[in-house]
Length: 124
Image 1: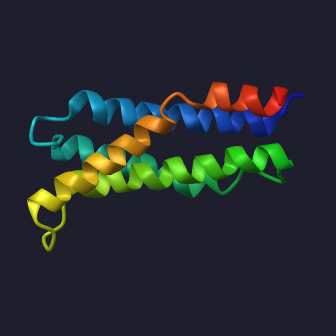
Image 2: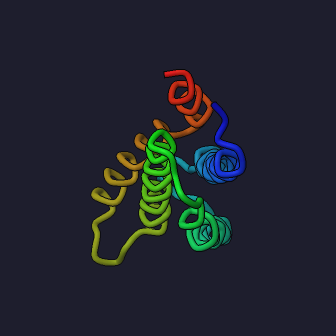
């Protein structure tokens, strides 16, 4: 079973999420920060993905709805990662780091998971 165009769009979207996460992971300092200019660029990229592709995958089969839900989760988790990388004035540093670590763990669970998940859904 092939998902055709929608599957290709989902795979491309997932690979772009993976690229955002890989860059964050590779750039984290010991105090769990990345340079502001890099953070801003990644946030723009993630916002562009959210506005352009996430909501435009088309009508979905039951199996593909699972992939769509995972894409939404990955997007949400990466948004949280970027939020905690930036920090918030009203959140203590200890809490920011704890919440960032939690979101990084969740992102790691999504990282490079598209192919195995798609294969499982197609073959299952």
